[in-house]
Amino acid sequence: MFALAFTLSGASFADPRLNVQLWGSAGAALVAALVVLGGGAAALGWMATGYFVFAAFAGERVFVLLLALAAAFVPILPRPRRSLAAGLALAAATAIALRVALGAVLPPG
Image 1: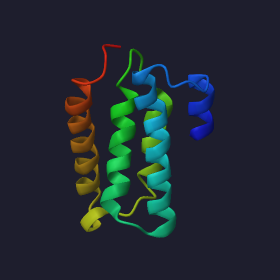
Image 2: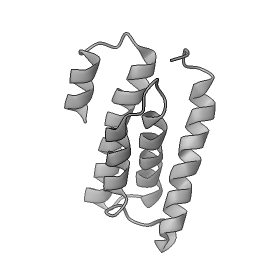
Image 3: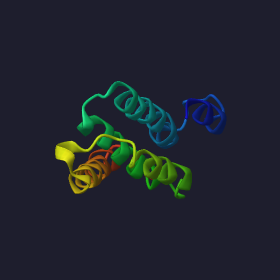
Image 4: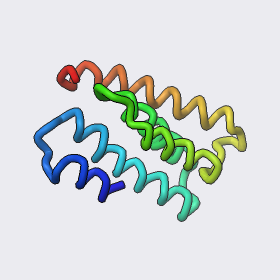
């Protein structure tokens, strides 16, 4: 994900919306991978998945790759309270909260 962010952004941090989408998703991918590999807190992994969903819809176009990345993590993330529904609800709540919080701060895209 970091290589994709580097390539698509042209190694530039000039566009704040693209930074949030690509570089934020790269960080979220790292968090989710560490949760899976290290058996970390399930909530962190599901919140990272919510970030992918938020970032996929944060710009002018939908980044289908980010939605695919979110879907790829779903089967391998630990379940919070052993419930897939709880994980999906946490991801959705994270995406909505980020949309509200960052939507007011980011310039229109």
